Amino acid sequence: MNNALSSFSSFSEKQLEVMTWWCQNSDNKDYDAIICDGAVRSGKTVCMSLSFIAWSFSAFSDTSFAICGKTIASLKRNVITPLSPILASLGFAINLKSSQNYIEMTYRNTVNRYYLFGGKDEGSAALIQGMTLGGVLLDEVALMPRSFVEQAIARCSLEGSKLWFNCNPEHPMHWFYREWILKAKQKNCLYLHFTMRDNPSLTPNIIQRYESLYSGAFYKRFVEGKWVAAQGVVYPMFNEEIHVRTPPKAQMISRFFISCDYGTVNPCSFGLWGEYESCWYRIREYYYDSRKKGEQRTDAEHYDELEKLADGLDIEAVIVDPSAASFIQCIRRKGRFTVIPAKNDVVDGIRQVSDALKQRKIYFSPECKDTLREFSLYKWDDKAVRDAPRKENDHAMDDLRYFVTTALNAPENDFFVMSVSR
Image (cartoon, rainbow, N blue to C red; front, side, top):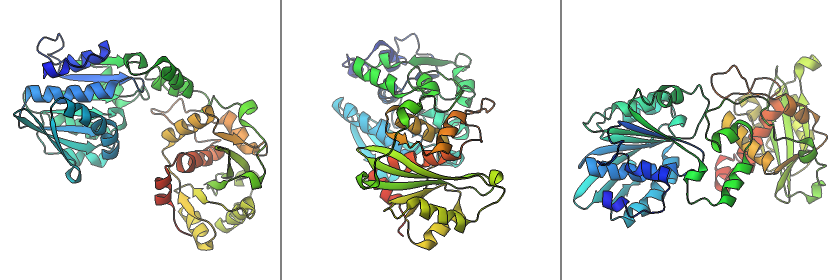
């Protein structure tokens, strides 16, 4: 194995440390685990996964291991697919049994087994329970529930087993940061922090591009690789001089959507979106605050306002807060609009909206006064133990997020899977 790894000369010094920490001539060989965290695109994953396989063949034969990601799909995309051709070039025979989420690998006369797991929720821990493993690689470990990670660790009971953790930073109150990174020495764990400069495949222009994509807490995490709390306004990159524009006329627009954050006691916010020259404009909106008006509206009354907002336009779909079950049924019964329950991962959605603002993919009509008002008031909750915006001044912000995550950023085939026929 050591001879095979020595053929790679293009790794950075940090990556080479990951590749060789377990080798007999390494000063780090007595560690029980390794953690690599830091910036996105910093070259952590490829060296971690390749080193994990090399170590497993040097230490064991006819043994089971686990490779874990947030989901099986992300694990295959981010780890298995890039890793397979590299291993094949080194002389490994790889037999992937997709239906069983299992890989059998052979190198010379040694055979080992690698089981693939997705740790997406608390129920995932049961999937790995009962196994006996020689080691586990947890990719994107900060996105997994603690119960799953601890169950995976508990499976590694063979003498000589080691643990491998890889992640991008999250909130500083995150359990993995507090229990593993801050206690790395106590847990006999090698901790290595990566920046984009540790990835020799990135050119200065590409690094500069990534640095320009993020701002605020997302910049500190994804570019600087820091475990920091999100503070202040959620969208500091929003600038009225840049993002507020008079939208083009309706006949110039190629596609229309409406996004809805539904409320009865809380405000109800709908936005009409139109695409022009690969950019999206929030053309106009409906915003009803029953507390201020002193009167609640029914589903039927809100639907009438939806019809007025559409104003006879060909609306591709109405994207609705997934918790608004009665309003979704109301729209479906009317039979005019295709309705789609929105994707509702709040923090990932905020990141996607931030990217769209930074890349100038979305603009807002001066008429959308409630959206413009909320941009200045929508703030992170600095008392929360994990990333979360304050639950106030967030209704237009929520329907904006639904539009970006569900329509603007949806792969075409994914969009049609989610669509519900009229």
